[in-house]
Amino acid sequence: MKQFYLFEAFSALYLLWNILFSVSELSNPYRESGFQDDDSIYGSMKWKTNMTSAVVLAVLLLFVGNPIVFVLCRGLSRLLPRRLIVDDELTSGDVEMAQTVENAMDG
Image (cartoon, rainbow, N blue to C red; front, side):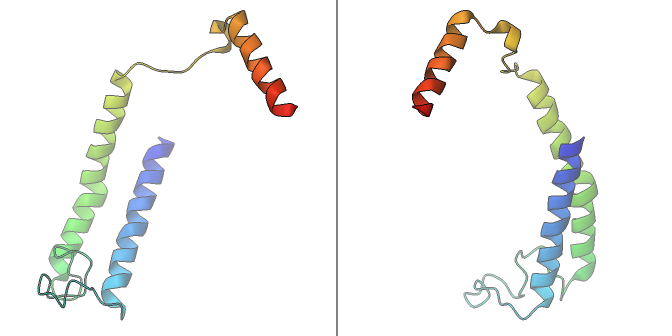
């Protein structure tokens, strides 16, 4: 669950940066080429000219899209086999090899 909170926090910080970029004096380099008519980072997140759709999209992504992506990724990771080696599964050859590597690095 800790990963979900970190994922949401990162998304919220990126959304905040998107808003700050849009209302600041920073300019979008693609505006001059004619691809965008606003200083927003993304054409669908035009905070100055179309705030309603930007707010709706931000709320949907933050509270619907992100949890769906997280649950899908979490479910996929549960289907894959784990690759963790437990200490009880180590053989004596593995331990000897690890000690040899440690000795070589120390000396």
